[in-house]
Structures are given as structure tokens and as C-alpha cells.
Length: 116
Length: 118
Image (cartoon, rainbow over the protein chains, first blue to last red):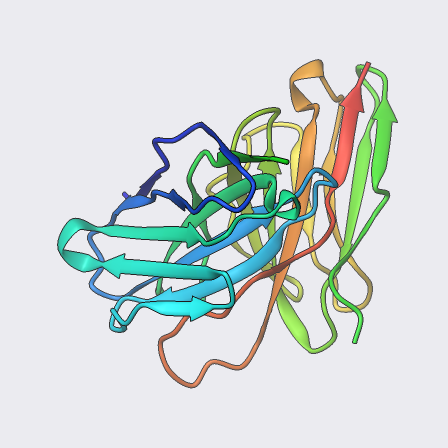
């Protein structure tokens, strides 16, 4: 069975600091997909990134970057120069690539608070 | 290009009533997933549907919950005889039909329906 662990329940940092959100996953499949979603206080889920298990290249998008390491089964998310608008709950999720069924297994989320 | 639509956004029911939650997938999407988010928890998969077919309902409670995705119209998640423990946010996600190889489509989520059972 697949599992996603986000050990950090809550993190608070002062604005402009960098912050890393940890995500560790478990799966028996050799092909799988990892995701990060953001849930701002308004409650909707915002897709941030999808990464497949064959692509271990790190990715950067503006102030966001992701570090995927298969050796440690981790897919960590770093926000550089944090801003108040980054305050949200962030979910890491895993999908095993079973053809026709890509249901997501979510972690319990990390609540990030950026202090002005 | 409209995103995933869910209605109502907020729903209040008394214990014992029925709740009907609707989800219209993104244009061109024929796969719908329902997830439930209990207060202060992550999202849990409930059911996966294609048009007129339930593909995976392994996350659905055995009683009182049902889902459908008819040929025409939105997907419906139905909860009969609601109880206080059903109070949660229910999210719908959709992804497109075409799959030429074994891969995973990104699921785009609707805004959710917040169900409150009094």
C-alpha cells in the first residue's frame, strides 16, 4: 500500500526567510507520480507540480523548487524568500501509475504561516 | 476554459437528511475522482468514475454513500441519512480520457463543497 508522510504539521517563518517542506513516500510500484498542492485559507486546492518517478531532476519555478530523491523516497519543497501570500496548507500526494486509475494518496499536510 | 465546477459550495443538512453534491468536470475530461477532507486532515480518496461507470469505489463508506456519473450531466455524490461525522469538505477532481501510454494525468480540483451536518 502506498503512503505519504509529511512529518511537519505546522511551520512558521518570518517573511523573506527560506522554508523547506518535507515529504516522504512509500510505494511498491516502480512507476509513480508525485504531486504538491497548495490549499490557501479560502479552501480550494491549487496544483503546484507533478513529477514522475523516472525524472529525478530538480525543478525550479520562480521562488519554488522541488528536490526529488528516489534513494531516500523524498520529494521536498522549498520556498525561497517567503511571502505572506505563501501562507497555506501544503499537501504532498502520490499516484501509482495503474493504467486507468490514478487516485491520489495524500499526506496530512503542512500548515505554513509566514509572519510579516 | 472553465475549471472543475462544484455546487453547492456550502451545504447544511440536519441529521437524517440527504445530501447531494454535484461536480462538473473540466471540458474534455471524462474521469472524475471524489475525495473527502475531514477537519484538520488530508484528503482521502473515495471513488473514481468514468462516464456511466464506477471504476474504483474502494474508499467509499459501505453504507449511505453512492456516486454516479451519467452520460449527460454532472457527477453526483449522494449521502443518505447524514450524520454529524459526515461533516467535511468534499472535493471533486477531473482528468482527461486519452491515455496512449501508462502515465498519470494531473488531476485538477474543484473548489469543494463544505457539508455541515447539524
